[in-house]
Length: 493
Image (cartoon, rainbow, N blue to C red; front, top):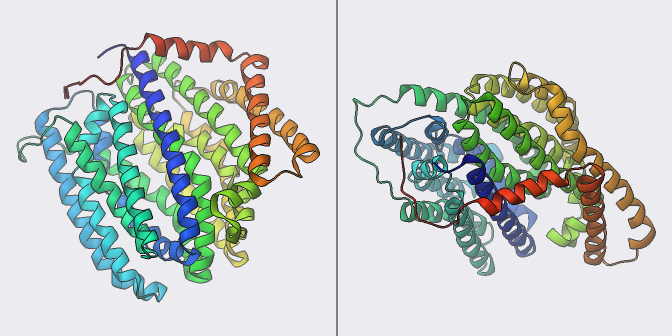
């Protein structure tokens, strides 16, 4: 494999660029769909996805992570994992069909039966591409993966918008959800040279299955913790309340999910290659952590400062009830930027069990917060959710790095510079907006204030905090990297 630093930088740029494009595509489609559909349409589908989303955690059974994390792996091992993924996909599709009548009874909404059945079909298509995607990650071919993700997203958006314009209502959202894994798997099979063989009983994959099982259980616990409020709101406050809360939650989640997906896959693949070199692993992790925070901190502040304009421009005037919910949820952007990279550090170094223990502590904390906030509606739930996660950040970080090569001082030094830069930029932007921007139209005000925030933040980070050399080093590394886009074979060992 070519120099890991250069390949990691190239992969990171490819993923961040793709996620940026995907963010704009998702935001654009949401803006259009929010105007074509009603809150109840989003709420109906949200009632199903809040439950079937649990199944999606099992869609690869953690086996893609096992493929990436292993130092060496054979064709026979990957083939066995492929067929195991296919079996899981069929099982999840059947479970979705079986649970459809239960959801109809629970929500007292008969339309949910066929919605649940249709969404269940996506699991089978997704299963067929899991190992192909994992092999591309293993080879750090993130440029190829970025192209696939963008093409699949464009296809699903086209289907969803077409159905919405044709008057299909909430079925447009179902069409988008099912089309995405279909398009993604077709692209993966077209661009990945690997073809699975038949199952081989003599090839043992027990250790990888155990690794994947723990990772999947971790994902399940976290998912339940972060989505139980949607089930509770749908049951006790109805589809419209859930639809409003869900769109605010989605807007807040887009930057977090996009950045975590962009950096997480690259970071996990790179750290897995360095698991036997602690010094280099620490260096790579801290640089990646600094980059994640420097990108996320100004976004979280911008969402808090400009919540009214963001909701108005993104969703339209009929969604004004989402503004306070959106603002209450904005602290979670920063919180997840702080704690999500810890997962990749733990899993890449084989500490997946500790990650599971962390999840088992988080889950009861946030579920208790939901219950306490539920009597006060979506706003109460949003406040309770953000508050408990804010209180949990420091214990989570301390537990995650305990006994590893990363110290509390390392994290404090890494996070301190972008944090101080963001705070100065936020205060300056807030004052400027109060004095000069109140009379502007929403788009002009958002553009003006956002530009001020970015300029002051970059000046603070690069010059006052002395981070200019760090980012110049990243740019020099990119110039040294080899050209992208060449065809590469899939090496398993």
